[in-house]
Amino acid sequence: MQTTVTAGADKIWAEDSEGSGPVLVLLHEGVGDSRMWDPVWPELTAAYRVIRYDVRGYGRSPAATEDFTLLSDALRVLDHFGVGSAYVCGCSMGGGTALELALAEPDRVTSMVLLCPGISGYDWPDEPDVEAQFRAVEESGSEDAFVELCVQLWGAAGPDPLVTELARSAVRAWPSEEYQQEDDTTFGRLGDVTVPTVIMVGDLDRPPLIASNEEAARRIPGCELISMPGVDHYPTVRAPGLVMQTILRHCPA
View (cartoon, helix red, strand yellow):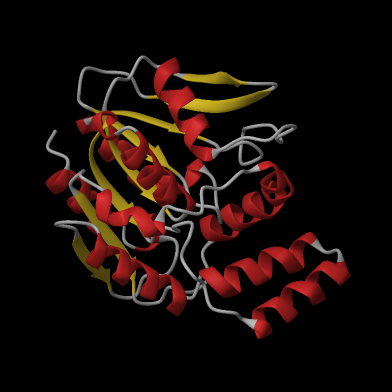
């Protein structure tokens, strides 16, 4: 079932596979939209009641028109579908949201699988070369150039049509990010996470992201860290089988 969830003055597109299985909530990355889950959707919906949605401005959700937080919107979606607690799988931006949810309302998160999570509050190193590339692309004003740069930075495992489409969706959503309000304390609070957690990160992801995930796994009590060989920042596209196996193992159906 596809629907829209009211979020203040805005709308959020969401999908609920329905069914009687345990609830699994999927939170997408910032360099794509909820279609990133398409490669694992049939298998997941056979085992769980799966809920996914597009963050404001991404995919099928209209652009944001007011300030919002990713956490508050995640809670809106859970409340809309009457979900008290659930397994949560979040990728990149969605992984950061999952951590914020587990810290704010741990009773609502049964366990987490985090795919290359982007965690607010991490001291990301300066990257002058990357910043120069973005400035050059901004000056060109070309959407295709932005998409190419996004794939270059985050899609190191090679060309793939879905990766390109996800990157294009992200580029179109970036203007809405000016309305996103971040909690920059998350990384410093990882020691307070009480929810069983697995972090998966590819060895072809960006080095600062890999470093942040390794440190996060050290800080989160009992966290399991899985390295994914040959995988970049699009793990469900590059290694859907490994992602599926990990979710099924960590989130008993």
